[in-house]
Length: 72
Image (cartoon, rainbow, N blue to C red; front, top):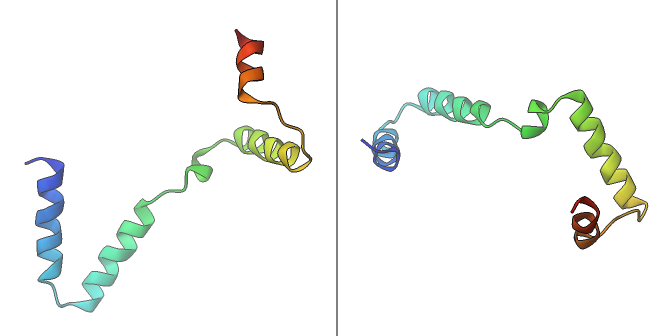
């Protein structure tokens, strides 16, 4: 069974469930599975991103074309 068929079958099963506690548990499980990529980054990666945002906020930016010229 492919992933799309599995999703449809899962939705069908969920639609037939009338137990509020079970639906809440499923919802909580799904929400907990959605991980924020930020939490997956190392402290150094987070710091670099924050630094880049601060630079952009201060108007310090380089065009994409300039970056490509510099690394080519």
